[in-house]
Length: 135
Image (tube, rainbow, N blue to C red; front, side, top):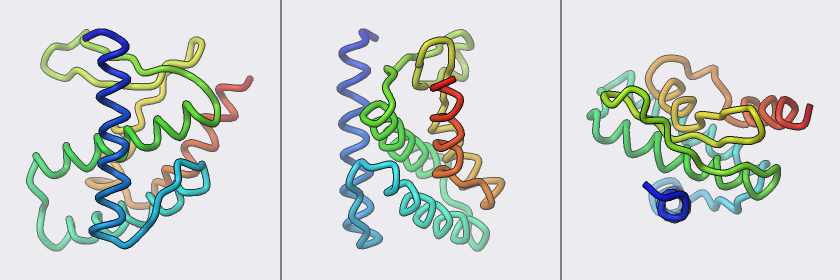
């Protein structure tokens, strides 16, 4: 996949996260770093629902990826970086933000918050990523 195609795909996925947040949770996301606290709220609610009745693998994949895209776009806007695609393992490719020599797999963080550990904060993760990226 070409970098321009990947960037367009991720920008569209980020827009899907904004639409989903507004329609399903009545939360307005504005591409700011502060809005990631709202993403934490949405993912925490979805995590609680997951405990009651498991979401399908497709729903988990979609939610993780659209919010990973949203977080990534906010990160690019506020810090820098670009989208990259790791296809080293053809069974488990993943998309991440590349900034200098650092990689930030935001969709993976969302997935772990949804499925394993609700105490994970994507806002805190991004704040730490910003600190690491600027070192």
